[in-house]
Image 1 (tube, helix red, strand yellow):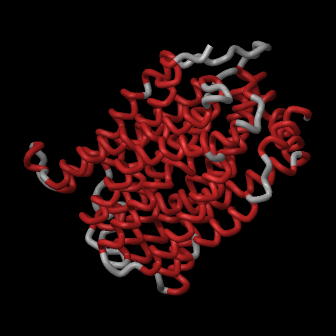
Image 2 (cartoon, one colour; image 1 turned 180 degrees about the vertical axis):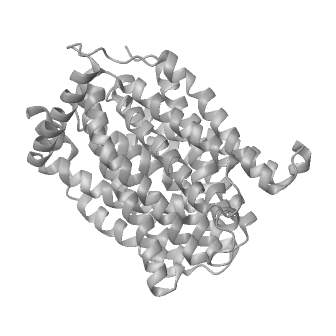
Image 3 (tube, rainbow, N blue to C red; image 1 turned 30 degrees about the horizontal axis):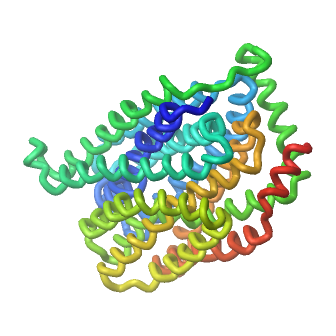
Length: 421
């Protein structure tokens, strides 16, 4: 039975780990990487280095996700794997505080490991969604997770920003120490607010009990079976490719926005304020998108978000003034959580709950593969053209093609086909 305690305990993990997504990935790490870890490097060179670091971490998760999802389903180890990778991310977030000025290689290495922990844990977090939400609540529960993520990540980020702007108030020596303490605060926040999921979210026991070696063998076998299934399910494959493309644009903007704005000369303080706007506007906007999907249609709501992102990307490539960055931050906040939450819930409707880990392994497989291409594309285009604006503009292609493919997707037909395999 799905209880409110299980639903809120599951959603609190978004509150917990969004601190890493906000303070580390989107906020302070890109800024700190350019000004501290890569001190003295050319702006476009540091953009390329950051893009490569993001792409490498995504590639590693891509290679791991299907296997881990299959093993988790075979042995009902979703929560164990979730916390294994969560605590890798937690440890790496704290470790960033020990990296010295100019040591960009070590910073990038730790960041890659932290991203692996963050993204891999989300594979198992997503796969628990069918355990806590029936078909009638899946949009709401998925949206609740992202909404709480915006709120929780935003609260800690606001505190971190205050620490950076007023370090003496917190007994800190300056901005550098404040940012390093912020990385440690993310680790503590993530660890603390993960506890409800660990204690209260139930996981279905496997029908067949196996030891670890048997689970690994079963996991590899399951990958082969899943590949065969997906290859026969043209509708599901079409959705996954569409998702892969448009979510590439979303994740790339999340990871590279601060670096891009700094590359075109904007004040870092203005960028941090814009990120705070995203967090606190994103909280109610994500719940609104979930409601929109209920009263309108999930697919139509996704189209609205994809179209909005296309215009946001074009606007970003043309902006000249800092106030325009604030306007774009509000626009992103209105659709970012919605497109993520509804993609997850739309996909959850297509797959059998008892095979959620297997299928969400593929969902995350393609989603994280997309973030290999996006940051790398920005870095390469910016380097080849000597223009960060053209680099960010290139991301619009992912929204165009992803939207066109999504138009052909029929979720009800796909759900029927999946259950007949």
